Length: 171
Image (cartoon, rainbow, N blue to C red; front, side, top):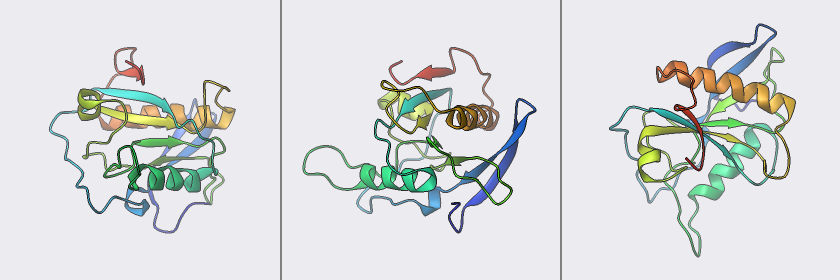
């Protein structure tokens, strides 16, 4: 279910076959009140692919839970200012009122997010596939929203989609 307050950013075609809705929800996600996110000083030059490892809840609820985990203070480990992923491709995407699958933008595009490592965070955006993709392949709907999400972010950041600009987490 699309949360109240979600902002429809775009509707994009998936290979001319169907539409995918892109919603901005960064303002609806938990943040760490003790940390201040940093504004980007470098232009985004890469989009990194990730997987969340955990399955969790579908749609926005899964993104919300991932954000809550990422920003909370832990006994050991790092608590982040904001959730780490620019975009979220849920295992089972939410459908909006027009029955379009949804790709969520979960971070302010002008802010640095933690996802890969220092320099990569400063010049990169990250798309997370929900789930452990070392143990399964993306679902069909998940792959569709991720592909459209990559195209959207590439347009926003004025990037060509190449093997140099769309890279896995480890690169």
